[in-house]
Amino acid sequence: MDASQQTPQETVVAPVAPLLEDQLELDMKHCFENLIVIDVGANLTNKKYSRDLDSVVQRARDAGVQKLMVHGTSVKSSKEALRLSRIYPDIIYSTAGIHPHDSKSIVEEPATWFDLEHIAQAQECVAIGPCGLDYQRDFSEPDAQKQIFAKQLHLAIRLNKPLLIHERSAQLDLLEILDKIENLPPVIIRGFMGTAEEALKYLDRRFYISLTGYLCKDKSDTGVRRLLEDGTLPLDRLLVETDAPFMYPNTRASKLPQHVKTGITERSLLYLHRYCTFQRNEPCSLPAIVEMIAAFMKKSPDEVALATAFNALKLFGLS
Image (tube, rainbow, N blue to C red; front, top):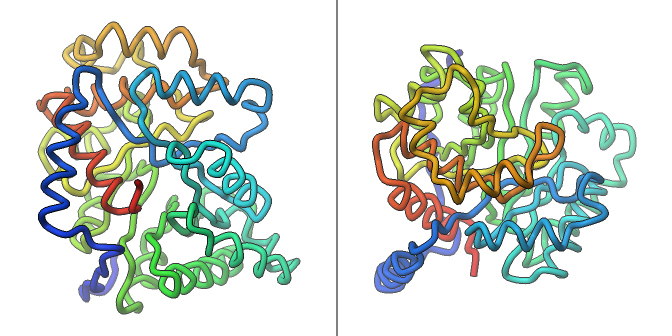
């Protein structure tokens, strides 16, 4: 999938002063008696958590997940995500977005867009999205997806907030839209499931890439695993998320290399196998995902945890 070679300029949200940035990294390094990570994508507004959300959040904290970003994928869930960020201050942060699948809801009820704009302006809302294009399923027509994606893109620019992008089988059209925009805010390709070639097109534009437990499902020679094994994806462009309750990281998958399986600590496996299932993944699975990524990259889990947490803190201005 191609796009013009012009690279949009990236603006920085709330830049961290050099001395403060150095101190932040030093402070993070003291946290590694237990792996400390930041989940930049959990769907805690999902009804699967309606009965025990307090326990889910506490388990995440106990496992080492210091902060959580709860995604808003519709006006309703964006409002709920904002509510959760106020119930769990300094732990949960929210995003406001219209997922490509829900684009038609805004087309059919245009007045609801103003509700999303209002939610997006809240201090606790740290990013716009997930938004973008998804051509794998036809829940919303491509033209409707492009229209609502463009609205969210301009909202992110106006509010100077990072942009979370969901893309499936639509990179050509997505980049055609983005390459026409000047002064883009930081762009995060969330839940990336594409090829190494597609990832390079994002990385060439200085976009960030967020990975999930999809690592366990990827069996291709040209996909996410290759990104990590050959060093294509640098640590300073990497973020991690669970996408809970989805994307359960099946560490028992037959195609998962043995050195990756043995790289997962007993502590991480305890949280994963005791509290997470294929039907309901939880944020407490994130340390296991980080350890798998580290094994593929041939780096220490601490190094990956530090880099991804630091990227999240800086990108989204998390306190």
